[in-house]
Amino acid sequence: MLYLILIAFLIGFLLGMKGKLKFLKKWNVITISTVLLLFFMGFELGSDKNLIKQLSEIGYLSFLIALFAIIGSALLPTIYEKIFLNKGDKK
Figure 1 (cartoon, rainbow, N blue to C red):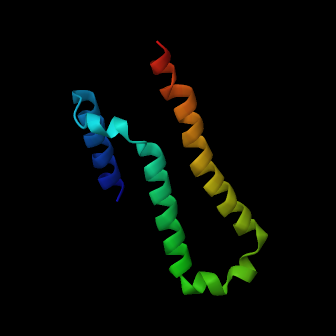
Figure 2 (cartoon, rainbow, N blue to C red):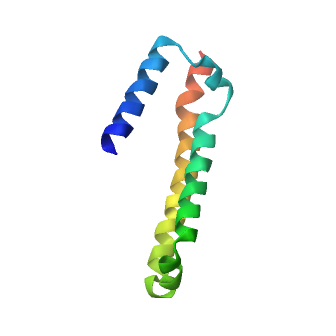
Figure 3 (spheres, rainbow, N blue to C red):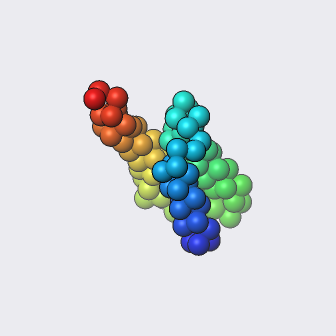
């Protein structure tokens, strides 16, 4: 799986350097991918019957971990977009 992730990253990096797929700049790709990631993560967790049964045993710590994962997944890309992607527009 690690090799697949690295290959996908390298292909995306090379296509970005070559200027291919410029139409993706029109879309907010970071937000779309974050929402899809959170959707599939929630789907996987919600469909795990054993996890749902053990929810009371896992406790508040697991709730806090999930909450901060969601906040981080939504907040950090937004901060990244505001700080790094808008600097190039001002030049």
